[in-house]
Length: 588
Image 1 (cartoon, rainbow, N blue to C red):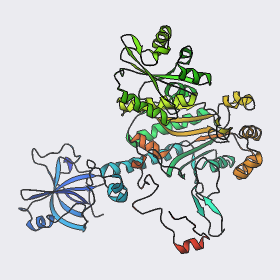
Image 2: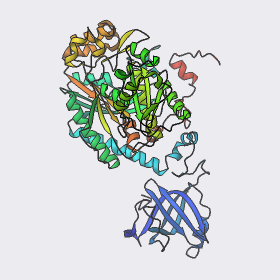
Image 3: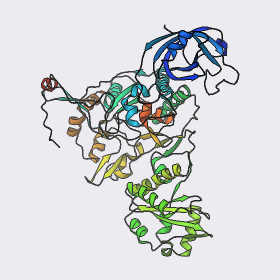
C-alpha cells in the first residue's frame, strides 16, 4: 500500500510514529510562512505541516498545492501545540510534520468546495457527483448503506433464508406502474420488460420448494419522481412458505432491529405498534401515520348533522363524514395561515376547509350561526377544545375527508415544529380493504394485487359486499413513510377465481397476464406470504433525510435524467438497425 495509515485514524497513541498518508487536499493555509494542509480521505482529515525552517525545498513544493490535488506525504506525527487543538476533528490533537511530498495527481479548480457546510446546488451536485460523493456526509451515507445491506444479509441468512436472484429481463405483467422495456435483437418486434419487483418470481420460488427466500433486489418503475421515489430502487425482498402474518412480522421486526443497530447504532423498540387501516384513517387521516406527534382527527358527523350548515349536511346526505382537527393554541392563526391550510386540503380533493376558534369559552366563526348553542357545547366537549384552540373541519366522502385533514395534520406538524426529529416511531398498519372502487371505470379494483388473500372471516362477503372485505395486507410505517408493504397470498384456485370475479377478470384474462404463475399454481402451491422493505427509503428515514437521492450513489433528477453521464441519450443508428427499430418522433 502507498500509505501506512488513513487520514481519520491517527490519535495521541500514534505520536512520534513515522507515517505515510494519501488523500486529497481539502484546504491549504499559510500562517506566517508555515503551511498547513488538511488532507482528506473517506476516513477523515489529518492536518499536515510544512515548515520552511525544517525543509525549505519541501515547503516550496507545498506552496503549489491546490484544492483536490491527490498527494502522498510522509512524516512524523506530533502533538499539536497548546491552544491549537481542534475538538471538532477526530484527529484534532495531532498533526503530521512533513518530511516528504509526492503529488500523485493534480486537479483543476473544482466547481464547488468539497465541504458539508457549503452545499452546492442540485444541478452541480448531480453533474459532478464524483466530487459530491467525496464529502464526508456522502461517504457516511455510502458506509451506512453498506452496513445495512450486510446486516440484512447476515440476519436473514441466520434465519434460514436463501438469497436467490431473479431475472432482470422478463415479460411484461401489470404491476401498477409503467414498465421500462428492452427491445430484443434476436426476436424482432418483441420486448423484454425490466422488473418493477420480483413479485411473481418469488411466488414461483415458493412453488419450487424454496420456503425462505430473500434478495436485495434492483427494481425499476417508469413513474414520476418525487422526494421519496426514484425510477431505480432497491428492495429487501422476502417471501416465506407455510407462514402466517405473525411470522412475517416477527422476521421483519428482527430485521429492522438489526439494521438500525448495525447501520446507525440506534436501538428500536419491538414489538412495533399496530393499528388497523380504519383506525389509521380515522385518527391520522392517512394509512402511513407519523406517530412522532399528536394532533389526532375526530369524527363529528353525529353532532353536526343536526346543524343547518349546508356544506356539512350535503356531505352527510351523500353518505360522507365530517372530520375535525383540534390545533391546540393556534386560534391566533391569520386568514393567510388558514388559506394556506385550505390549499393543502384542496390538493387532496377536498372542496374547502371550515374553521372555528375557541375564545372566552365559546366557539367563534362565520359558520357558528348555523349551530345551536347546544350543538356548539357538544362540539367543545367532543373535540376537547380549550381557549386559544383552532378547530378545522373537512366534510366529504370518508377517504377524501380523512386524507385532506390528515395532510393538513402533517403540514402543521412541520409548521409548528411538533416533530421529534431524533425519534423513530414504527408501526404496522393491517386489515386494508381488499378492493377499492374506481369511479372512472365503475368497478372494483384490487388495492394491492390480485393474489392477495382475503381474511378468512370475510370470504362470505366477496360476492355480497366486496367493499367490506379486508385483506391479509400489512404495511410497515416509520415516521410517516411507508417502508414496506406485503400480504399473505392466495394459493387456492377457487378463492383466486372468486377474487377475480369481483374485479371482472376472467381466468383466461389472468392466464394471459400472469400465465406462467397461474400454470405454476396448478402444481401444489403452498400457503405463502411476504413483504419487501424499500431499502433506499429505509436508509432515507434512518439518516433523517426528506430526499431519497441523498442515499444513492448515482441518482436521477426530477426529469429522470443523469446530468453526469447524460442519460437518457440518443441511440446509435447501427444499434437501432440491429434492434429493428425505426424512430418516428414528431418534432416540436
